[in-house]
Image 1 (cartoon, one colour):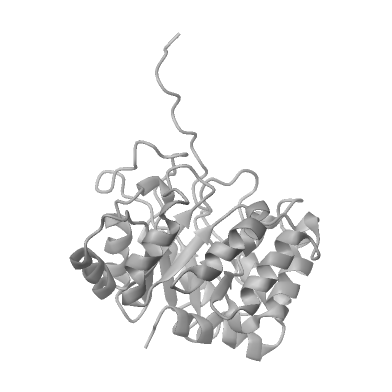
Image 2: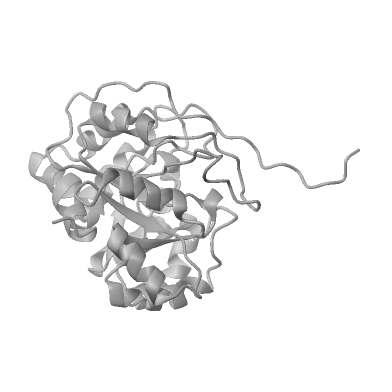
Length: 293
């Protein structure tokens, strides 16, 4: 029997097609969380990755964008690349500054020249992944936030919901705005009064924390993920001025039936039936947070 390391598991490719949403996104709407992966020959995956994703190309995503009606996008560095941000930066170069912003993964040793180069390329935040192996350790959280604060960037955290009550004081103390991924990664079955949701609401009330209303990873029932509707709608209603929305395309490292991105936009429209709130979350909040002009 071979005694070498076990290869990281493969994850599913992006859906070959998605449904058309009942209502397209408004002009200048932003999908605030996607990943571009590959081509592998140009951007090789990191050796310490937790999973092995198929390629998810710019052209594939632009087909999704056309169906949804979104015009702006935030490309988030996938954990499989570690601190090698070349794929993300190449995507920003393709989409251009009027249509895109980026969130990268960096080490505390990064120089100001490289940070300035990333800023000029459209980067406006860093991601701290406290869930998937391959992300930076929590000890880097404060040090990294201090490095990026002079650039006006934010700190995006992907965290297990159970950790939010303990982590909340640290997040409040950071010298940057904070963006919490994936509805806090809190299982919706825990209920709105669970300490994790209470901590999340408290963070949103502080005025410097934002929430990505991308909720399917909080589902317990699985596809079509409508068990998250009540929790997601209550969080958006609690702090609509602090929410942004994203698909998480191509949905890497997800088991079970993949989300349909058209249905994800339909779900958000259910959570926020008021057109004024839709405009706020899909257009106005991203324009402010990601500094679209």
